[in-house]
Length: 260
Ligand code: UDP
Image (cartoon, rainbow, N blue to C red; front, side):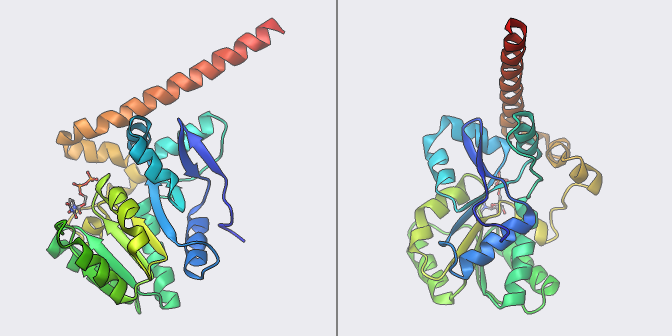
């Protein structure tokens, strides 16, 4: 069955699962049906690979995920260059609506946590409009204090939700999932979705289709918001490391061929 035991590869020491969008949805369905252990879904992109390579805590969180989706085009390119896999992108922002579609179809309640108070309401309305019958068991904005956290966990548990989407940005949402997932009693699938609620609310537009197709959404965001440059640095660092690793492998191969 699709989604069963996908191969897990490593890009610069950071794990990624070789799944398609369809596999990812099937895996989530199996988690909810109890055919697989409950767990969390994290997106792997170039920035996370770079931060995980210098922060064992982040690497540990990624390793503990039930599913690691190849979110960024950089991951797809690196997997291809290293001869590890022919992946296609599974953007977290696209997986979330697919999971909501599945949840609506099967009657699984969902809980939304993250983003600003007005945004989360608009995102919830947009989802209910797009997926008729979707049961939103609860919502919570993303500015909960440490003191309020146990009340939030109780509220999620009391809601009976099966899926939880956490939109706190990275690495906040990964920290939250790694820390609190074990306290969630009814959640089978928890996905970290970054700024997806902002996009769903309609307040932040995704890049035009042209940029999406070329995998250049990051570039579009960068030209719209140059203050993101410090965040983009890790993306360039990733490109540089991938290239260096690839060239090293190429030279090794050439040397081997020449000495034969
Ligand atoms: N966010 C949140 N709680 C916080 C910080 C951020 O819910 O304490 C939300 C924010 O409103 C936005 C999303 O997390 O919806 C992504 O935020 P940001 O753009 O700062 O994160 P990044 O894109 O850098 O991961």
